[in-house]
Length: 42
Length: 228
Length: 221
Image (cartoon, rainbow over all chains, first blue to last red; front, side, top):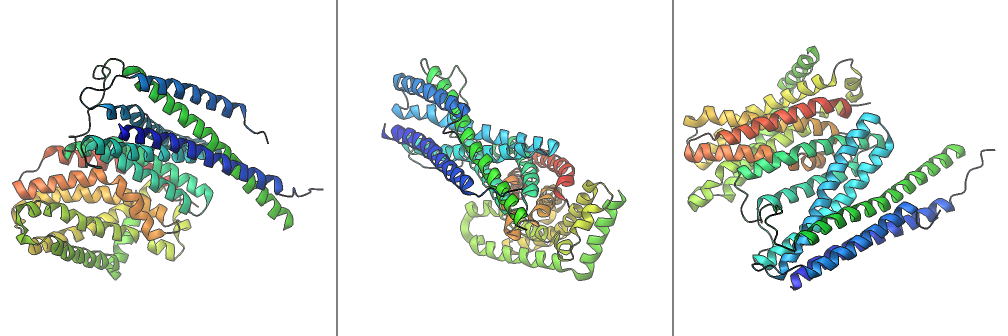
């Protein structure tokens, strides 16, 4: 029984962790993109 | 720079709904007479297998489309599918041994399906390493596509190869609808659907990251050019 | 077609002049045989002996990978890769030329290694020599076809020598399993199992076609 719970735990935790990591990477990249000074093509 | 795109919101909602339904049915599913409660790992393990193979199939087809159309977006899709696919493959290789330890007392055996999954995993890893270490992103896209196609060809060959070597022993045989007991069809099917939705959701997130990276690279390139 | 022969001839002639790949492969294979012997000494009982035919393929694999790593070395060192790519010929034929050259070298090394193996493990290979060649050749062919394709890729990556085995080995499983199964049956029972040979030939066919067609995209610039 505990094995089953462990397996489900691994999967659900894994999906949540991966999604969270992707979300934080997205936030970081958005920040970096916004921080770039847009070169003036005047 | 919206917080969450409509696509992301929809896929997240669909995933949560399906996952909830699936969890309910897993909870309600009858306990297998032979294996006991541990049999319920089936409803999470096999869906992960689906995720892994889905990932690989999509990687190979996107790669092929990239070679045909030379549109960078196909390559980005291929890379994203490979990452999500390898994630699911990792889950397969984690949940499988957990089940094995609980059922047979051993973490690993060189059985057909386990070996195939391990090989798939190695092909995924080699694919990702090839992408990282190739000099030049356009070249990396081409090489990766070729490798994925080669890998796809090998999967059925591996099946016959390992079968030939007598590796089809311990893993439970393919579950047709008939071999699943009553009340097990629903959690199983829902599990597969949940895995597909989870794949889609993670893929959407991953593609967002990919798009941002490309935008960032372009911004950097523009900045460098205008400074020059 | 001329391109194929040109590339093949050039590779074989330059190999004949320096013999560096051949010698490297041969010596390495011999070293592997010695190491394997130490790992599985003859007196260790029938169970250990049963794995010996498979070990032969370990030696073949190492030698093959070593040779393939050097397949595009001269082109790379002399910056001739782009020239090769720009040649107005079907790139698939360049692939075939290169692959056949490696194949020829590997066959020679395989024969020598089999001899060393027979001596080290006290096997009588003469009665099965012909059929062993029938197994060794398709195995080498599979190795060299995908190997040449990936060698062309690896040469453009950061960790050149490591990249080739990394890419090649997971995909070589059908070849290895078929070859080892066949060699096992051949050396231990004296029979040549058709299913194993069939797997080898089918795999070789698939590999050759895929490599020939995709080489176009791999040898570029």
